[in-house]
Length: 463
Image (tube, rainbow, N blue to C red; front, side, top):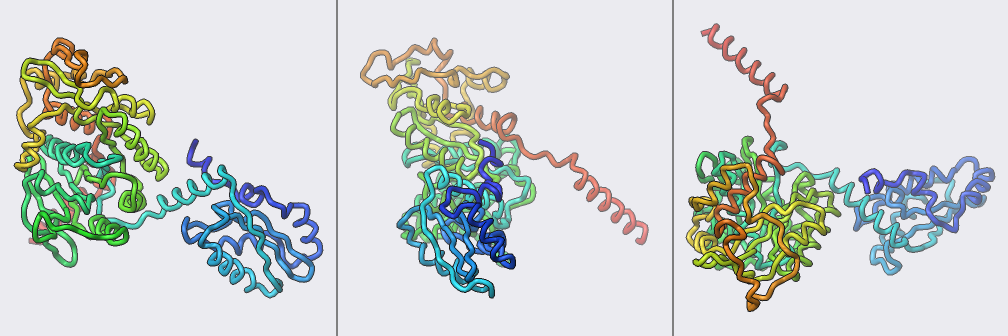
């Protein structure tokens, strides 16, 4: 469904199923020429549902108006649920708005409930409005924001986020890393960074690290606590406030090509808050081959799309374990990432095998993505062909004990490494799926360059 299809027109909003029919309104219009139903509906546009954040008419909750000759106005209001705890607030707001008109002597509200379809449309409209009213942030408009998300913990989301960020930086990009997993912050250790965030003029300066020909700019709660094992026992509002600071009060550099956000697992307050603050963000979902992880990850995709975020694709982590003799073991099953990609309708960006280089690198602060890939893997990366480890897999899970779970290396040319997988995915992201914004040919930037050159020439002439 298109976005336009989720935005009901004014006529659709007023003509929703209602006992207050148009015929009644027309009849009353003749009896009370001074006050029209349209006038009442326009006033109701000033009544906002406290939870959804949009007005009653726009959400289709104001279903109809009846104006009696004695100035009594009947208004039908459909709630999202009959037991809505905000009913009293909405009642006060409706009466306060309408009773401000001298022609209205009394307001009576007829309560009803939205149908399932109407409720879904109202929620979609509310989310769309939130996306269009995103708060200002310090993140440059040209920066591509990548949310690395997962449905549950333990799938390796943070290791994927840090390794992709390192690989992108190693390819020459300025990459920001935001550790939005406030409770489970782990980015500083995984990237081998220490120190404390400092501030200048009330703004937070991220910790920077040169990587290859690029750079990492990192913010994390890990830079704000005394010890790495300090527990943060914060509730939703404080968590959202911390992430808001990272979005609004950090000095993100103008040359930032990517901002990689390590999201907390699931679909809670922080995820919804970031979707509201960063409506231009794009989401990459990490899962494992296991069906349980796949089903939970599908909820994250649903949350992202309900907030109008683009789902870039799926990364299957811990896909296989390669043994020294060239065999592969499907420790966590087979095909969960491919199946999730099919269900969501997005590409499978890659499959990352189980590799001790990842866990060792995270512990030492040396991302596996920065290691040298094996000879065969490097040859795959330097060509334009898709490496064998990204070939579609069967969706049927194979138990580890089954002999069929140990496949010959001949099926994949050579056992692959996580290093090669991360490097491949990073290259595909920057070249195909989420290419950086190239501003060199921008007319505004060219004009700025010309003006700067003229100013410099004029200054030299004065000297």
